[in-house]
Image (cartoon, rainbow over all chains, first blue to last red; front, side, top):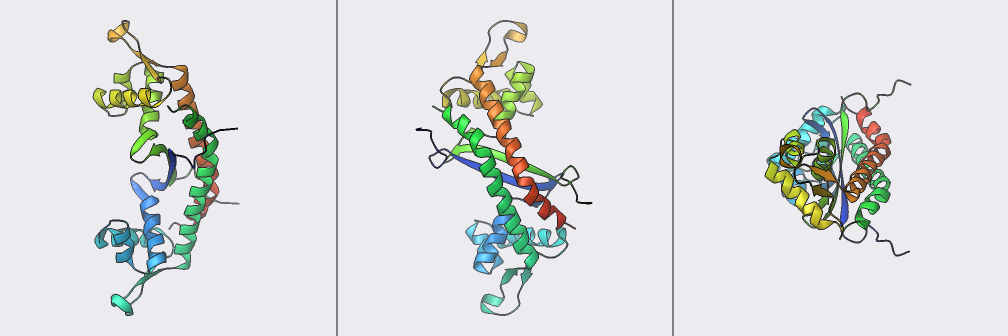
Length: 121
Length: 121
């Protein structure tokens, strides 16, 4: 079988959002901010990686901290660069569940996306 | 079990794209145009339903007709309103496969999205 795989281009992009009307609770941008904070320990640095201003990253963090039963991100006073930020246990749980949802969605969509890919010029 | 279902708000949105670099082969907008043409027999009417100009809808159709090994949409001369448009067999196949991919992705993502939903305030 010489079927094209989706490791070849074109690549599938799967974007998931949990939202109510226009309000997004979690989506690709918020998840990337959480992941950036987990990896850098800094809201500013997480934003920078994403080409996002500190104000934008912080406003997404504030929204998530309000939307969930527990804050997802905790600011830490002091330390280097005037205080960093970490994911709370709830934050880690939400990020992990979101990545799991993405992975499962992508895997489930692959067979049908391969059918489309096979029809591309 | 009184677990919230995702029939309740907030609702999950799953968006799939097949793309290469910045070029989109199929995604939510193109799929909706195909579906609108299947349902209305008209590119203009399909665009209107989506709040899209005729020019925009037609440019998406032209791109898809070029990207795939066979055209997905065929214009028909004559008939009411100066000629309609229909999906070709390839067009029907791509639309169906795309909707299948969406459905499978959504279903696969639900368990993890329910975990997130359970943590919402």
